[in-house]
Length: 181
Image (tube, rainbow, N blue to C red; front, side):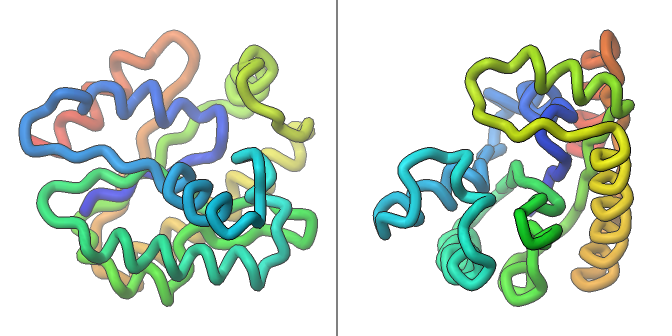
């Protein structure tokens, strides 16, 4: 499994679009799995409410997601967040109890300059995101870098960082595709 991580607005979906239709590649969105499970349990009615769930509830849902992911076979590419900014602090997107169930071959962090991320978030009217200052987003980025290193050390997989700055999506897509050659 290849795990592609990043904060909302880094451009994960844009970069991952390079893999759509690639033979043998199955794209899976972690947030979709979380939402499906949490909405069935009546914990949330909107995807953006996931990050506001109590940490204990989030862990329960993450455990179910981990079970579903562990059953997936083939060249799975998981689209997820390295960490989630919650009202109580940053929650690891891939806690070790979940990560330990997966056969991870590669970790990829998609990132972008903070100003680009803020501009992308402001332009995205499809999501109900909380406003985040440059300072807060820089802190979130630093947390993601630390977690990326921890995830890589835990599962023994290489970690790649791809910068998706504004106007350079094609270059970021090429960098991702190179990992699958």
